[in-house]
Length: 544
Length: 76
Image (cartoon, rainbow over all chains, first blue to last red; front, side, top):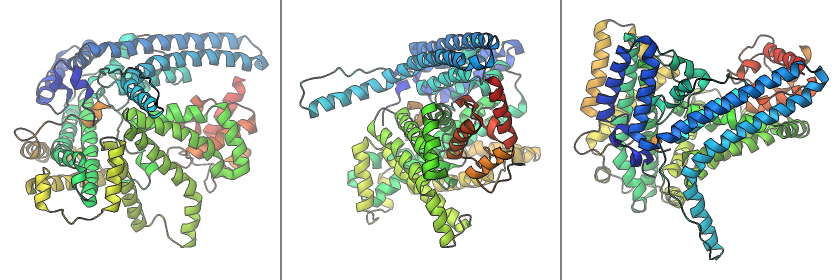
């Protein structure tokens, strides 16, 4: 895996982790205190100052990229708005039959503004994140063709969160273009929306329409929000510090030295990494959403019990939800909504039916979505494979859907039967683990070798307590991880049934409420993977 | 409205379109069904449905779909 890019740039690099002492015991409490004592009118400016300070502390002078994105949002938004006003004025004076061609002309102008902002925002991201990858591959191609040509391989330091805030900025511009929101003439409000410190490192990817006014109308702190936010933060710390960080040395050992292990151990490593990633990322999201709740801001959820999914397409509606909806709203719909694709859908539907007709245009759009998803995660072939692997799974799922429906009717299996649904969840889990193996592997080639080893050499002959201890997990670690996983699993079942643990506890008497808080705190202090013998692990998604 | 019910029924049968108001939220119309529906509506009603209009607010019920059609016809 690449090293966390923002650590290279940070003035106070330790602050970059939401689980560091400097963040949890200094930056966050001081931010809450300053927000608390500030007069209501100034609270939004306090939030903005804290957010900019946070970004500067972790990215230093690279803050210019964030300010650049704010400027693009501001000016392109206003530009689009003035074009839309001009269009309204011009069309209202025209007879109905002349409106259509005139409207098209205005739409072309607006699309040009959106393209301009895409070039600036995504172009910056491409240069910083991908130029090294592309130039290395071009040089490899020159070598393969035996051409005596080389292009320089640039190396740039990326500001933290650029993959997240670039998408946020672009979503605002496209939403203005689509008429979902009106252009905001206040650059300070846009800056607060783009830089809100809890979510700038790992998301969730927020939309202007959901969050900007919440932030701008920043209200007084409430004791209820403070309590609920702290509880959510502690639950995130349990996931990250007790499960994910404890699994880290074990996972690293297997992925770095997979040639020494048999296939069974590689499979255990892939499962352990999938658990680590989920606990790390969803735990970080708990901290982010909990922190925002303290300030009275409601952020969108990024996870919804993904391992209860019965198919890969359902999995992606429950895992990294805000990224999935971003790709759906701004790539999938843009492609399938184009005139050519609509024509293709219409004619294909007449020829090959209701299901396969739209699938033709849909699959072209899906391909772009998953290629973008893979590339968004990183500039490496294993990430591209990761995206296309999910594209292939989702497409094949859609292709066989009518056949599988007929098959189940023929053999009289009820797809809603609990046993079958559990089978579907396990099957989806297995496919996810295979995808994550490639995602975590040190390059595509190593991922492929690990996968082959897992298939061709699948046994557990050499797996015993001594080996697992050598890899970084003793019996104590295993028991703590297992018990904590059971707790998280139980909470997930309750959430799946629509029961909120925090809301339930809130209704209990004072002894139960405080007991709940102290129990969580004690659990983290006793069993968290920190201090001597543990290396702090940066949040895994911060590097993307 | 009857013609709209027929189109919807043709794309996704066995749904009570007169009462259902969660066509998108309840995943009754998935992405593929939406693609078919949009192209079918454009042909049937001679309208262009911009991408911006393909959202749950406009497609969650037959009534909302009809409102969209009427609004788009009015626009042109």
